[in-house]
Image 1 (cartoon, rainbow, N blue to C red):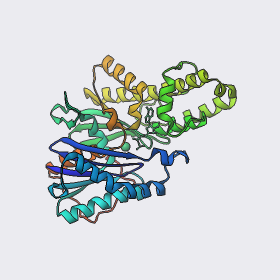
Image 2: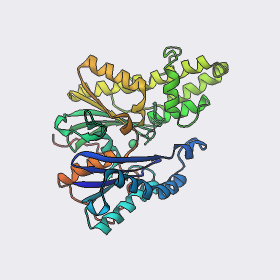
Image 3: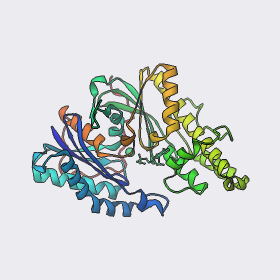
Length: 351
Ligand code: KG4
Ligand code: ZN
């Protein structure tokens, strides 16, 4: 099946062409620079930028894939969760394309797509990406982005339930907000990652929120507040480049320890043998390293999303859409609306 997928849930405009589990193209236009001066994503600006970029991005995806619009057999788009006016751009354009081509259309839950993105890997000896579900095994999946921190039990393909989520700030938000307190540019996550590599992670012991609570929920706003107080009480730290690196390493160590320990604990409890992770924060080198070490120690297979698929992209939307269409998931009516608050299922199904 040859399918075009569009993703516009936040600040990345992306289009991908997928065929039989292979990603033929995955074009991503990031708006980071546009939002930088505001210190965060401005929804109205994001939507306008999606409107400007969507067609060129989709055309580039078709061109790179060597596929003409008339060869498409289905169209998909992110339906939620995300910023309503941003989602609308890709979703309505995809519905219109499906209508014009008279082909099936499917709306995809962005987080559900993240769950399966670690199964999309680079094909050996080639630069292209393909999904390999033949190796699929039940897993606990960590989704960590700027807006969400989720732990999900994926019992089988297309069958999952949420174990826990963030009750306030997401992990990426914590990186970005603590970085802002240190005077770093938005988004601060990648900058903290870089500076932390030359810092002392034990320079200061920041709290590890909810680490020892028995549930799988996360909370990072208290950590942000303690960084705020630390900077207030130690203003000279921000004048010393090495102390800034130490601060970055200490903040990163606190976030990573909570994410890794809670993920491994949930995986043990759920009785799975596999852990997966995706979302922008999965680019963090400390998280990748610590998660790999912990999984090795506890005997879990770890599947991390490829770096280029950690952040938002249409390839993961297209891969999941194709799986769903092949599984004969009922198609929604073509005039369905976006679902900005669309949460993944929390109930366990009969497994
Ligand atoms: O998944 P994503 O691209 O967008 C959504 O939020 O949906 O994630 C962006 C988040 C930002 O908070 C950014 O600071 C964080 O991912 N991030 C990182 C790194 N790269 C991106 N955080 C820590 N270390 C990184 N290397
Ligand atoms: Zn995402």
